[in-house]
Structure formats: structure tokens, C-alpha cells
Image (tube, rainbow, N blue to C red):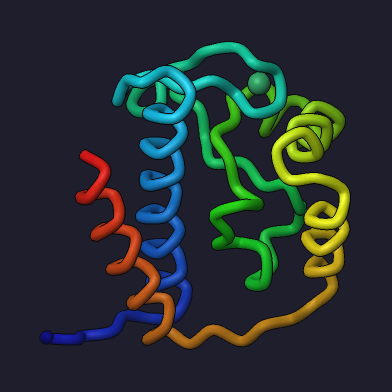
Amino acid sequence: MELKLKGIKTEKKKAWTAFSAFIRMRDALKTTGTRTEAVCYSCGKTYPAFGVGCGQAGHLIPGRGNSVLIDEIGVNFQCYNCNINLKGNWVGYERHFLQEHGQKKLDEMKAKKGQSERITAYEWRQIAEKYKQKLKELV
Ligand SMILES: [Zn+2]
């Protein structure tokens, strides 16, 4: 495989873009059975999963540190209002997370927040490729 790496910021951004698309498609299929709409993890309303006015991939653990940025359990479809305007709407997020995964998992996720993790440009590239592939497998 040809590998021309860009700067680490660019690779990280691409990894996030690929991961976010995967999360939104996964949750669209999971919550509405469609490829176009998904239910917000925090408020339970339905929004477009892609395109204009679409929701986002929102984090249980804020801060977007490397240890929590790409996490299939800790990132779920969230509407713009909850993710941005309500700064994650974490009350609704945690309630849903507890129902789905339980307290132990929630504690584990929270403990990750303070961990720092070094991820190289090459690893970001691999993450991007992985999630592009996973998205293809869904659609
Ligand atoms: Zn919402």
C-alpha cells in the first residue's frame, strides 16, 4: 500500500472524519433501521445522519484527548443541539450510557479521561483506513 503521510494534524482529522461517518451510519442502522436518520443518544429525537443539518458523533468523555477520541463505545450519534449548544448534554448521555452499559463501564470510561496516549501520524492513517473499511461493511 502506498503511504504518503501528511502532517499528524491532517492524519488525525482524516481519522476522525472516517470514524465519525462510521459512528453515524452504525447508529442510523441501529436506531432507525435506515441509512439516513439516527436517534440522538442524549435527547432521543431523530435527525439526519448525514448532510445538511445532520447530527454528529458525540463524546461521552469531553476533551477530545487521544485516549477518548476514537472509541466505539464512548462515541455515539448526537444532535447538534445536544453536542454543541448543550455542550454534550451529558445528563442524557450518561443516563443512556448507564442503561446500555452499566456503572462499571461508565467508571472505566471516565478513568480514561486523564490518560494521555501518543498516536503517530501512521497510526492515525491506519485508524482512518480501518473505519473506512468498517463503514463499507455496513452499507
Ligand atoms: Zn439531542
